[in-house]
Each structure stands twice: as C-alpha cells, then as structure tokens.
Image (cartoon, rainbow, N blue to C red; front, side, top):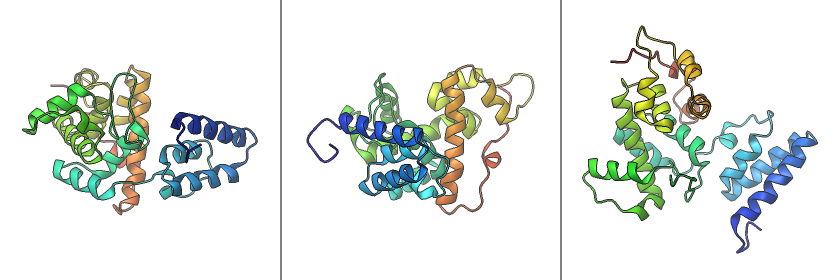
Length: 232
C-alpha cells in the first residue's frame, strides 16, 4: 500500500493495526523491527508511532530521527535558537510529515497557521505565499523565526515559548506567575489546557534527546527547564 498509488491513509491504517497487534502480543522485537523498516524507508511518522508503542527502544537515532538536519541547524542558528529545541517542536507537531495539515489549518513540518505565516513574512520583509508553507525550507525558516519571536516576547524562556507555540503567546504570558518566580515543572503542571500541558513536557523531553544527538554533550531535562519569571 505504501508503494502504491493508493491514499497514504490506507497504508497508515494497516500499519497502525499491525503495530497494535504486536503491542497487544507484547512483541517488542517485532515493533522495533517495524520501526527500523519504516525509518529506513523514510516513513518517519510511522517509525515514531511504532517506537511509541514500546519501552524497549534503546536507539535515540531510531526514536528521534533528524531529517533536513542542515536546514534545521542553519535556520535555527540564524534565528538564535537551539536546533535541538526546533527538532523537539517538529517531532511533536508533524512527526516530520512535510505536507501535514491540521484540522484548524496549520501546515507543514512545524505546523504553522496561515495568519502566523503572514505575520512572519511581513516581519521578514517578504511577500506571503500560501503555497510556500509546503516547502520544507520555508516552513523550517518560518517556524524557527517564529520560535525566536515568541521566545523574545516571553522573557527569553523556552518553556514559556513552547507553551506559546502551542496555545499562543498571550495565553502563555497569562499563565506566568504574578507573585514570585516559579519552577518550570510547576508552571507546566499549572497550565490549564491539558493539550498544552502535555505538549510542553513532550517538547522539552524531545529537545533533551535531540541535544545529545546533535553533539551538545550530556543532557538533562532540568537543564532546559529554566525558572519561569514573574509576569510583567
């Protein structure tokens, strides 16, 4: 099905069913083998889906693929952000499906909303082209630029910016403490939206893993979870 002209969703459904069967049988070896096959095919979202169904994977390269590495690193550096963080966002947003489209209209690898893309294009002095969001380079360039924008709006704090990327920077700012600084893990647990609460945890965990893959040395999630300053 994957190699046929059929709609990709058919192949995805069959793949998901096969992985679910293996999971129910607790056949971790089969799940890991399936993940490797999908990874080697470039079917990265299904490789990640398989990996997420077992606790036995010991290869970060398998569970955290790094497609388009030169573009991610270059545009992240241009925007002044950590490429490991950009990868953490991308893995959570699209599972590296370049033509991914959400039910609310967000598109591409970094799932950028059209209105956000217009804002980014204007800020960068470019004409907005809706079709450009499907281009890998444009999507990564816009996504990393936007991450930098909202991080600057939110006290330079990547945890706040991660919440802002998911729920909007104004919401993330409203959730900041107004009495005294707050530990990041406490901030994350206090987020009233379950989707954003889980999103922040997943992205920062992803970023920690990608930091190791990118040769940034030993990583702990606590190093990335900076204290949340008071709202100003």
